[in-house]
Length: 266
Image (cartoon, rainbow, N blue to C red; front, top):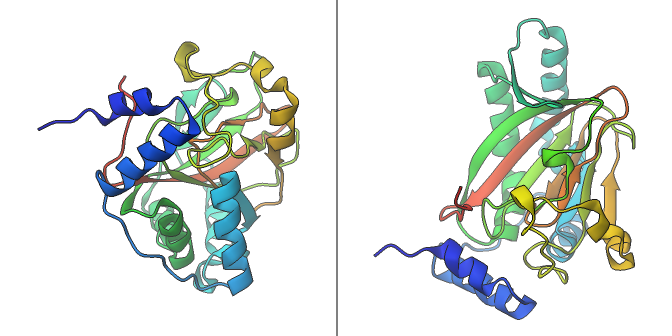
């Protein structure tokens, strides 16, 4: 018997209490629960990661603080390869301001090292709490364009699943003018602001004016950082990529979903 989970999600998405019920249904009836995994990290760091990710929906560190030692050179290897083979790597235009690098065998192999890193997988597993898989891996390049904000530059929640994890790793230094990743803390499914939802607007994007209230300003975070900055976020919370005012932004993106992913119907 086919059951439309998305329809149930819409019905339950009215209050925090009902959202918690929705998560329980998703976790115990639609997915396979998994046990907590101990990370190969300092105990205090592991605790900090678990608490803050669940509370805020986002954490960020230098990649060398999180990745296994054997994988510490992977980010630099990818950056060097892209820079040294810029004339040979094909690009796919996603939006006016965004390109996707077409992954060859070398880049796929390097991304798989990050995706299968024991600490990365442990963080993902402990947060999602259910069996999951790598849904997508990619490398994006954003550039400055003279136009109004659009698509991923607007506030939105991803509809790929009820809980999900995206990992972003900066391949170049990112300041406030180079398109940092922005997030409204606690708007993810288990956050205190989980019932905040402006997705009724066109194309599931929310306008800036909604987030001018003080409660959102206090929760706003803009992640700037050096090459190798690693962001782990539940993009069921409100997020966007800030418009570039100069240069470009190169970034690795890994997406993890539950085995029984819940995708918005097109």
